[in-house]
Each structure stands twice: as structure tokens, then as C-alpha cells.
Image (tube, rainbow, N blue to C red; front, side):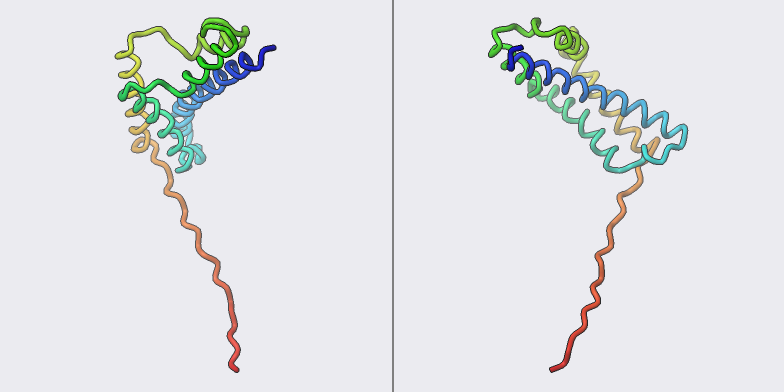
Amino acid sequence: MNLYRFLADLIVAVHAGYIAFVILGMVTILVGGWRRWGWVRNFWFRLVHFLTIAIVAAEALLGIVCPLTTWENRLREAAGESTLEGSFVGRLMHDLVFVSAPKWILTTSYCVFALVVLLTFFLVPPRRPRRREKKRTNSTSSDD
């Protein structure tokens, strides 16, 4: 198997995982809020979840091509393939990740989804991170 082809397929799998985290994370937050699952209120999970979709929305608004897409395309070219070629799994994941729709629909969708994720900060508010207390050291001083 061509190494470039394998790496391109791997990047598509990472891309699909990124998308799955955004979508399934949203579903999990909503269901978890309804079911009172405490872990969905974890501040760091929620922040990372919001930032993942905020990055996508910002890229779309600014007209920036996703770096994962760029890397995949370069690796496909290095393997002597087009983006439509690749292994079965690579093509399957590619078809799942890349939807055919006008750019303005995708940009609007990303921005609306980011706003919905932001709205969940009010509907299912995360807990504030706890501040760690510094350990006090019991130092004894000796008088000379």
C-alpha cells in the first residue's frame, strides 16, 4: 500500500472523527442535560466542544480551506491520485465528510450550529472549573 494514500485515508478518518465529535457532542450535551448526567457539564469538555465548531465556522466565514482537507489533497496528489480515488474506507469516509452543497449553505449551517452550541451554555450550563488550592508548606525557621 502506498504510504501517501494511507496517510490521506488517515486524515479523512481524523476529519470524520472531528465532525462526529461536534455532532455527537451536541446530542450528548442535550440528552445529558435532560437526563441530568453531571459529566456533560464539565467546563473543559464544553469549551473544547464549542471551539471545535467555532473554528469551522470561522474558517468558513473567512474563506479558509480546512487544513485537513489541504493535507489530504496534497497526500493524494503525492500518491498519484485525485481526491476521488483511494481505498474503500478512504472513499467512504471522504463521502461522509464532504457534502455537495453551495458554499453559502455550508457556511450558514456551520454558523447556526456554532450558535446552537453556544446556546447550550445557557440551556445546560457547564460547571465552572474548580480552582486548585496551593499546598501550604509547613516550613520551620530556626533561629541562629
